[in-house]
Length: 137
Picture 1: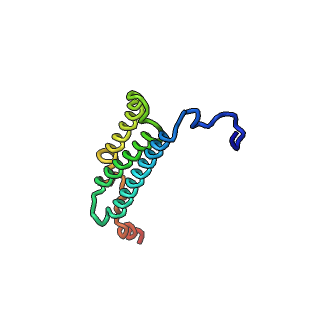
Picture 2 (picture 1 turned 60 degrees about the horizontal axis):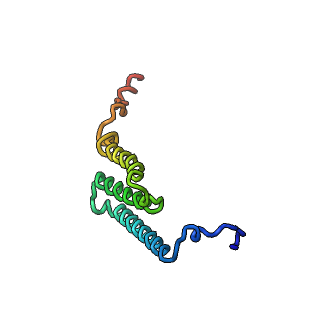
Picture 3 (picture 1 turned 45 degrees about the vertical axis):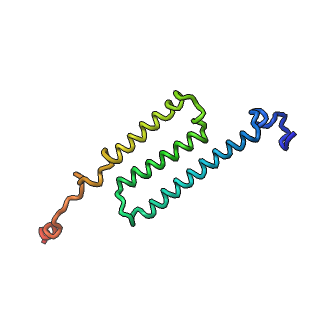
């Protein structure tokens, strides 16, 4: 019996995992950890150095979105066990996500994300303040 006085066997015994399978699983998890860490460090480094390098905002948007998608893929693929699913199940999960990301990219580059480059119609109206006050004299 273990410390919780649980009559059920451990998960490892139920799943019939041996040490060789455990080593493979741990190796895979460490690979994903180091990969995500490297991608995050690259993102942080580029974010810090972007003003010095003169990178365009559009490039930075695509760069960060691309790396975020790669990180999201590895998280879902490994930790949510999407890699072990059947092909149609993978597409059932990945297709809406992909469509949503493409929509966000479209909105940021072509759609309403272009508001900084256009002049607002309802902007402040310039008035001649001195002429307005001269009428009251």
